[in-house]
Every structure is written in structure tokens, then in C-alpha cells.
Image (cartoon, rainbow over all chains, first blue to last red; front, side, top):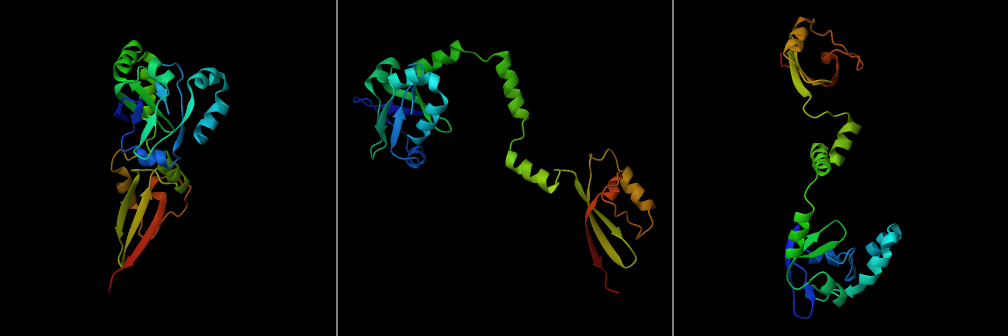
Amino acid sequence: MSNSAMIDQKGRLKIPATLVPELKGSGTEFFITSEGGSSVRI
Amino acid sequence: MQVWSQVEERREHLCCRTKYFGQAVAMNNQGRVLIPIVLRSSAHMRGGVDLLDYLNYLEVWNHAQFLKNLKSSPITAQDKKMLSKLSCAPRFPRTIRRNKEEGHVHGTEMLRFRIDRECIRIYAVKRAKPLSGHGTLGQDKTRAPGAENTNPNSSTPSADRTVSLKVCLPR
């Protein structure tokens, strides 16, 4: 599914509220990376 | 992080890139995640972005970059073939597996009633192939009451009875 999100001035991504419970189910620490540098994977 | 460890084990050849861009981050109470500056500049992460949620990861794209990427990689004939294959694939594999185990074939059952002199018998008939006409019902009429074929391996459709319910009428 696709969602729109915002990145604030400090470079923080605000994760949509619908996805937060699902993410919190696997912890609050994530690995953030990219395969080609054109997109971000969390 | 656990998911990432598994990915790292499987995709060692990608580790150089992913480690260059990679960083462990924590989500705060408000659901915010800090994107490392390397990624912010290379992926043009600012303002509104598109967030795609996959089974075990999220992908974040700059909106303009995402549209550009979509245009530069149109759907090929091979992709279309794969999509049509997927659309023909069984939609609920678990249900289909369970039905196969139970010998249930969707849409191939029908109830058949027979009124004998003293009782009504209801049969659930399971067919290997869908009916082409009403010929099999006609075959049944010619059979003498009480002369049921109980052989489950018989090839005639009327012989594939799975359930038989006998309701006795009051005299």
C-alpha cells in the first residue's frame, strides 16, 4: 500500500499512524538503508 | 533489526552499498524516524514523500523521483505475462489446500432428493465434472428404489455419494 508522509526540517520521517502499531510490533529500533541511493528502506 | 539481520545473511553481495547507507535508528514516541544525512541528500528526502509498505520493510521515495522511476521502467511483456499468471493463481491458498485435503471441490455438489414409499432420502452428490445437462437425474429415475450403488470408486456420477440422510415419514 502507498502512503504519503512528511519529512520535517530536522530530517525526521513522520510515519503514518496506521503503520505505527504494525512497526512497533517488531520493536522500535530499525535499520535504515538503501540499495541504490535513490530510495530509503526501513 | 531482527528482520535486517536475516536479509543481511541472504544478500551478502549487497552489503557494501547497504552498509554505506545503512544506520540503526530508533523510532520516537510520536512515530518519527530520523533519516541519516547521507540518505537524505542522495534520495532527495525533503517535504512530502511516498511511503510504500512491503511485507517486512518500508520504502520511502521522493515523489518526483518515484514518478520518474515509474516512467523510466515501463511494464514489459514479461511483466504482463507474470501479472496475468498471478491473477489466475488461486487467491486463497490455505482454503484451497484445506478443500483438497477434505476432498471438497467447490461448486460440484448438489443435493438430490428421492421420495420412497416410507421415507425421504437426501443425498449430497459430488461430481468429478460439472453437469452438462440433466441426464444423470434421468438415470437416477430409472433405478429401482433402494438399489443404491455404494461403491465410492464407481465412475457414474450418481455413485459418488458422500452423505446420505434418511428422514422417515410418519405413518
